[in-house]
Amino acid sequence: TRRPSQDSQESQIVEEKIVKINGEIEIKSYSKGRFLGKGGFARVYELLSLDAKQITAAKIISKSALNKARSRQKLMSEIKIHRALKHPNIVGFEHFFEDSENVYILLELCSNQTLNELLRRRKRLTEIEAQCYLLQCIEGLKYLHSHRIIHRDIKLGNLFLNDKMQLKIGDFGLATKLEFDGEKKRTICGTPNYIAPEVLDGKIGHSYEVDIWSTGVLGYTLLVGKPPFETSDVKTTYRRIKMNAYSFPENIPVSDEAKDLISSILVSNPADRPNLDEILKHDFFSKNAIPKLLPASTLAVPPSSSYLRQF
Ligand SMILES: CC[C@@H]1C(=O)N(C)c2cncnc2N1C1CCCC1
Image: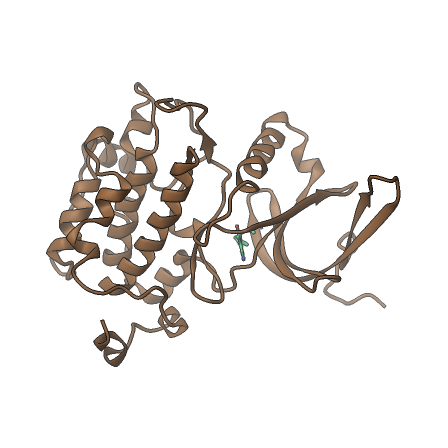
């Protein structure tokens, strides 16, 4: 009997057909679990591999959605870049395969969602939490940039938290790999949330500095509770970015070190921004001891004063 919730074309078992080198066919079976949501063209489910008993977050993309060369090309670029990465602050790329209907991308399950949901619940974070998350994001970016990869869409919704509360950079749909040092990228597709002025400008190319810009926007957003240039309409936001028009609200306590660091990053000329190592040397990251990981209780409430006393 079919479960009432199961609609006709979606089956609960996924089978991967593997043709071995000696011509034998091996079938790997997976069981589809909870629906996690939509990500781009994909419907995302928890997926349990029935042999290794490993559970992943599976992006299931129907091939019919990939008929346009552009979207197929984008997906192949995302897979090509992401599958080569391995770092504690980068979402793990477990496996990918296809069957007659779909392409399946199996990613590290991050059961504590993203910083987007966290900030929606908490409104804004304490300085020690912002330090902890920014530090992990910068470690992940150091790894990406050392492999000549620019993420280009660092935003709350692409920063995932796994069950251990580790921060993981995800979604490489807008990422690009530079072929040589000094290469400048000109085009950018999609609507990155924390777009850097030089990308909007379009005259000069852009490079790693766009990810640096995003860490400034991220720091401001975590501490203030909303992005620095956000307005009700995109065109006005872009104008504010080009004008570098942002300020810290009087009524929200942000430390001098935080303001100084964020202001040094959110500068229009990419060449004037600090690099990742310079950012890590800033007083903001050395003024107090920073926890490697935060307790899961902070998903709902600020860290308790007794917890903070140890730092
Ligand atoms: C698989 C897509 C995306 C993701 O990239 N990861 C790593 C992830 C990992 N774990 C849970 N969800 C994840 N998501 C969510 C699913 C719905 C929207 C974004």
